[in-house]
Image (cartoon, rainbow, N blue to C red; front, side, top):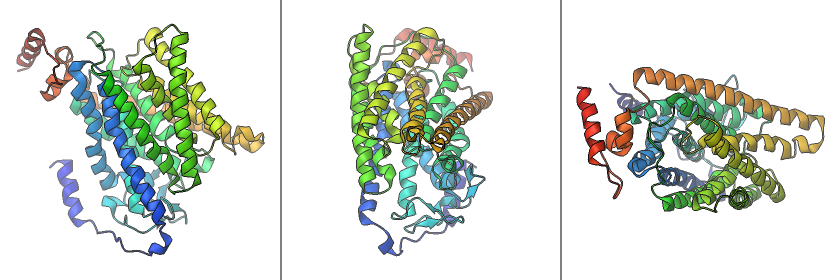
Length: 449
């Protein structure tokens, strides 16, 4: 019996949560804004599909886009069944949530939820069900980000199993430690407003582990199939990021406006910094560079969006854009790591540096000039180190374990003919697969019986 069948049957016996409550404690403006923000954040995953899909070769566009798009289905089901409980259920040791707290979304309705410790989970002015939906979209996009590192060579079924593994063993614990009111990192004073650690550092480091484990592509690097797709994807990500960052205030208030403003400034600053830095290094300004720079700025400001000034946001995005630009060049020219779409040099590096700079510039951080500020900054460093080591080791183990059951990497023949055809029997638009490649692929299939 499949896992989906078990989940479907279990859903028949789950208690219906109540959507009747004391609406006097619910702020309708907050509800309206969070519904809007949730829609924006979900839109980021199709945006990422276009962003990544346009960067790969024509014979891998559909497979690359599907790897992001499919997360909206599989993560949605797991989040409903047990993921929300693992991330935001009653605290167990500051590391993980009790999986039975919100099993099959039991007790997740219109009412505000108070944990046994007395702390409110998910905001005091919005229904818990709305907070659950908002956080689901973060859980969806995080494993989608990883796919860019092993693009054009990963087996689709192996990737699905790794997504499940990553979600349960890495994402949910990090979300709990960082965002649950009783989480370990939050108690340390670590600030991650919208996902510098939970989303970007974790996905970036898992991407690095995946690129190392799967090895380099055996085929020649393809030219980007559709740069307008990349521009479209970047625009969708930028728009969706307003919900991602400003929505994380959980209120329609000044903090949301501040996060909105800083997000806009950071993205624009990073885009122009990337372009000018490319020109200083002797490259031509490009649509690809503008798109990547835009997204790097969004990553950079994510952990501190509501806690820094506009000037600080400008500085943070400027510095991190240069660092990520150098990291992309260094990865390509100085290492043997085939991170196909530079997930770690952009998202991983941006999320890590953004968290470190958050520890400096937040009011309680190093910039305060107090001994307490030094402690807060050091806790940010410690959290980054823990996330890097834990995510890399556990991800690499996950790739290794799944590879023992289902080969994570496609055959050379499948890679030559392209994943669109070999994994999904589809073609992108006018993309042509030559007769020689198809014959080689079919001969490989025959040899396997």
